Figure 1 (cartoon, one colour):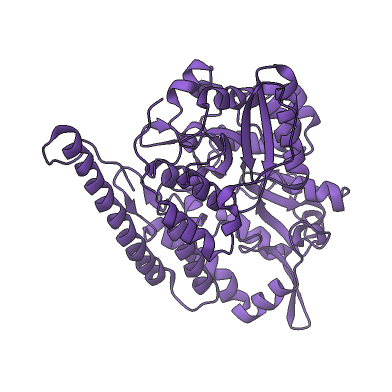
Figure 2 (cartoon, one colour; figure 1 turned 90 degrees about the vertical axis):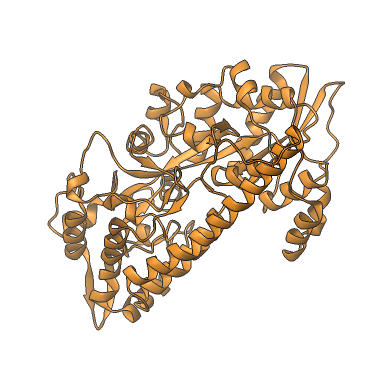
Length: 466
């Protein structure tokens, strides 16, 4: 398989890594010697650690005993996206890398990873194998760049015991934003000048600060036009809604309440202690519940939406996934993809998804997977993954900047330092400047390639969003 020349530079990649104090990674991990018995050796770098990393190690071991031609060596590490870029730029990449789906635009436009369309077709990895919302997470500019490793959708978790205590029906979760607000008000408890419990807290867990507009019919990026849309009327309405909580109880009171909440994977997690009655979370929360409070009476439902958007057959929710990619310069792409294709077999996918406590990315899950899954509401998460209204991170290499800008803007709105309409308009302008800069650079490169191949100056025949 031929590849275009890489446009990332070793100097730039090492400079970025050195800034993080990680120059040691320029030469990649070198694991313990393992017996390979004349096989083709595939080095696989993955970001998972702990029980998630151990589960992936099991899949690797299964592949290694399933045949006698290829041997996969598994390395687990943190900051993998930075380390991988350095290794690729240095001409000494591993053969398979585990990344996040939002890495695809930057890696593919930098020619740091290989397009996988031909290999996927040859090994039977096809779009129809997956839930409808999955394939777009693996593609960019019309090509396939990664294969899903695990995926998770985000939904509303609510405490059924607290519902009963507040006189709410524990079998009737809120369906609309108006109902969410009404339920939250009944679940909230105040005493002695402070908040004891919040029915719903937008900043718990505060991992997706940009996503509220989608439940109001908005989005923050148009991939067709390459335009940032953060300041749309739908998004503005969503962040005005978010701001109602600090406006009602006071930003200082909310901050004081937040300061008393425990960390994610601890018994002090806000949902486990009952400090927050409803929270927007992924299926992995069941692992925390099962570990620290298995008797918690909870249930899960799609996150509420504006009334005009409510359709139980088409839930709206965030879908995120980890991916496997083959880096540019990999020594044996065919062997790399043979291993990747093995991980896509239903029993391997369901094993990994079960241990990670996530829903399946496949078009259909087995009865056993549903029956034995540690999250008894995995069907809810599966219904979101199957929905045509599932949404994901914007597909642009400007996403790291966009997310950083959104995080800062959300914090200013949450602490009542700015009005959503003004804040989102400024945010949109800053991000659009970066999107335009990237588009100009991409057009210039396309023009250079055109001139190199034809001997005449000219621009690209087709343009994609940044």
